[in-house]
Length: 444
Image 1: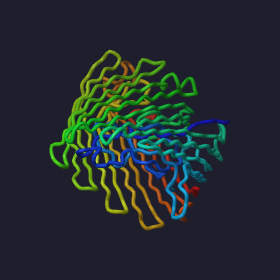
Image 2 (image 1 turned 90 degrees about the vertical axis):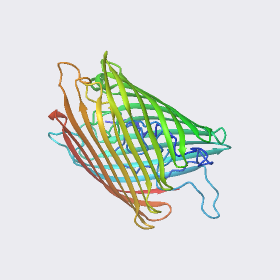
Image 3 (image 1 turned 180 degrees about the horizontal axis):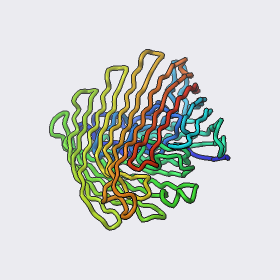
Image 4 (image 1 turned 60 degrees about the horizontal axis):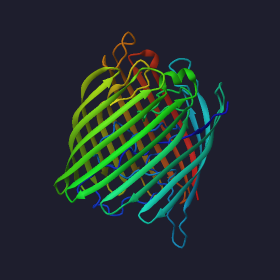
């Protein structure tokens, strides 16, 4: 069976307000884009997400460890000595994967070796006070032991435009389209299971302003639509999600910003009466504890409307971005909030989430990364449809560990392991999946 698709990963929902003054700290914002990896590549295409690495709920006003960027390989578009800068970078990756649970099933598991090849082209067009970047990829995956069709053709398109109006005002606009075939436990949009191919498109934009040396703001919005090929799956999963947030930051000390923010998040489904509208108010602190360490905390409350029902719930989040010397960096986050779900009998879940990303350059030739995302989902009476499953809880865990050897400026080899697990009170949702991969990539 031939499936033509797009792989896409949503760039961060916002370029959040950091320490005061946010824009004055980086006069070159928005930065020129390269194809440097922001998130280590994975043999599993991921659904749209809301964070730079592993998402929780959008955190208005929280500083990012780095600006979002389009990424495709470990290589840079910057020219070397005596070279002419290129507006494009061509990359290609060949990867072999062993997957012990191709269909994410708890019974009658199917294992298979998979061969992936994916060439891509990254375009960068810098302009005065602006930058436009786009990445186009095509590729294919061959499954040696998949009964329903052993070959998939894939492609992707991502685009981003940034503009600096002045030293105090900037805008960032992003769009991506995708056609996915694999689940993504690192994401809160889409499905946790291999339920077939689905189309996804996400548009997002952020407007950042430094009104005075002490007053700043970020206005962000995004729209995501998801449509499945399989009509049976589409009935319960086709959806649209909208997010809007407004944050205002007040500098109360040279390294401390007090933030007040509001967030609207709503998800609706095309063919079934589920989904919700959630309104959240919060306050918190952004603290630049060290030049290399940023800490953000938020606390507040949400009011959620679910098919005529209404209920309050607390909101909280913590995020840490730490550059551990010249050779390693750590991102950590925690959030507690109402988020979407792929459970067809529920409108959402109250999720407690931990996500972290650690990268370490062992030497000039070797680098490594470790990624973790854990969600404890609580399906309460307020969110589960009456006379269906009743209340229940579920743990979702995803772990990726990888190692890269830099052969030269243009070639890398990589190896890694991905662990996925769903443990639910609803036993039919349980599964465990292990994937081991080895690959080589090149760029020009």
